[in-house]
Length: 97
Image 1 (tube, rainbow, N blue to C red):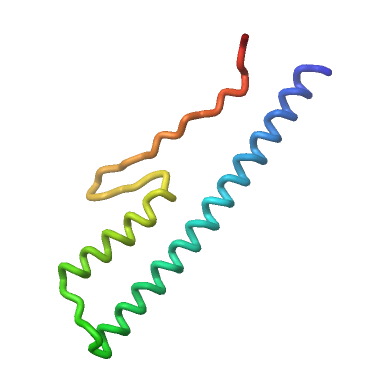
Image 2: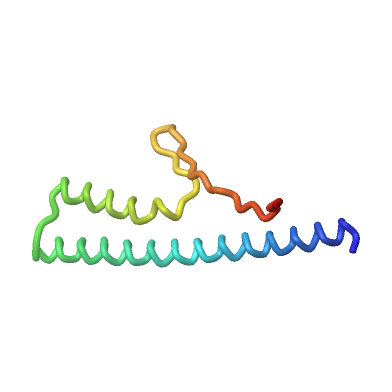
């Protein structure tokens, strides 16, 4: 087979695998966001019916917990003008022996 055909087929499979990974991560991100939203709404309802009160310290801790649950799904994060980017090791399929 010509090199161009082999190159295009490997490129197509690599793009398909990458798209599947992106879709899987996006789906998990949506699930985690919905779970966090439900927990925050439940806490707000409990606070409004005076089951317990949420102080500003507790509210900050809830915010940090939500952020920590969401950060693993992000590739880039911008906080106060500083940008953090997650390093991803690339898979090396061209192994030479």
